[in-house]
Length: 256
Image (cartoon, rainbow, N blue to C red; front, top):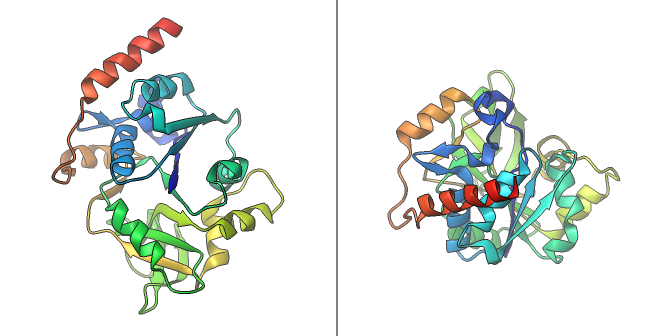
């Protein structure tokens, strides 16, 4: 299976930190988010990763080139942001008409990727995608889910006041090729998954709740909490991050 890591966001709520640093390279406990993500998915058996870039793209490119995973990573630049669904559509050939994992790489997580993939493979008949979910301490800022007894998503409440519960969309999915066709059917280049695509598949989405850590670090308070709370699962070491970071910025300095 291949994976798309969405990493092009500007991170405006984290300014001034993100005025000079891409959001995907913001550090939690001394490591950039993107470093966690690459280890998480590639150690779990994902074949290749596609990362989209936009804001401060040379920094992301330098970091990827310095990664020990570089041979299994492809980069694609967006001069203008395409929206989450638009990025999928623009790169549909890269997915080779196969199921693929898609994740918002501005979340900090340690979910079990292999178990998530297995759950998708064993999903109920007729389901077109699988969604990761987590328990949030701020339901009003998330997409809150309602499920049936088979863990199928029946309703989706995107950032509403007084939502019915705290089980939230973790913004990690596995899509079947028919979901890409659904995006294409809108016949426009800029598409948002959470508002334009996910609602069309209610009743056909398997929900898998993580028992690990999951947090959007998109504002200063959430970033502070992540740095305070996060502990890696056993066996997920740093894998020479400091050396990679030094090499990445050396490459960037040479280019500039």
